[in-house]
Image (tube, rainbow, N blue to C red; front, side):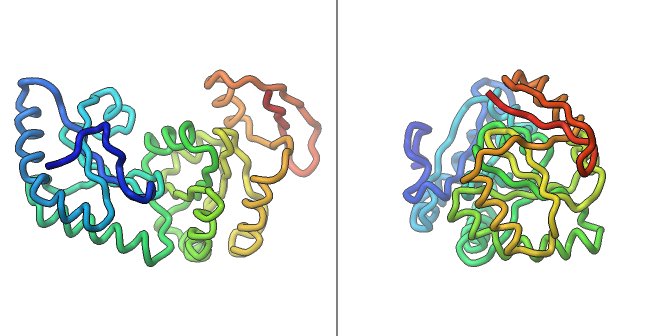
Length: 252
């Protein structure tokens, strides 16, 4: 049987699968019951893959992850949520999707795509997060993505989670003018990488340095606005132009 929500997600703390369900007599609840009945048939197979299988009835949490209508199935790989888009009552398809995602995580360096809503949640919940803002139709973006996927596993080893987002509106919200662009978030505090995006070794060295050094970060006007709205405690040093116009932050 599918384990209750109080059960640990998985044996390795890297892989977990979570079903959001509804607690009511609405038609959506009947869909949850039907999906749960089907998914219980593959719980043993998921367990053999080392993937914990749990369920939760928390519509506010589902809304936070922007999951839409329930039921919804989310696979967590290294803390990054991947939402299942198929039919939940097709247990064979779900199991195939699980195996595919588990194999990808084991063998290849793949930087996960996230939505704007999920990105907001990750920024607030993950201490060390690096985000590639890119355009899937842009040749330079895909070249950079290919380079960065070579260091995805190395980032994991240092406890740095790596995601990417193809959303120009979200990039603009962060004051990012050029795509592709790389931003490192440490406890929700952004730091924009200004080096060569095709030099993977240099980027990895920079990311590791962020873990070890205490520096006052440069941010854009838009980033400062977001931080103030989020209620961060900070001292702001307004500087004359050094390289470009910069606002330096000292977080308290």
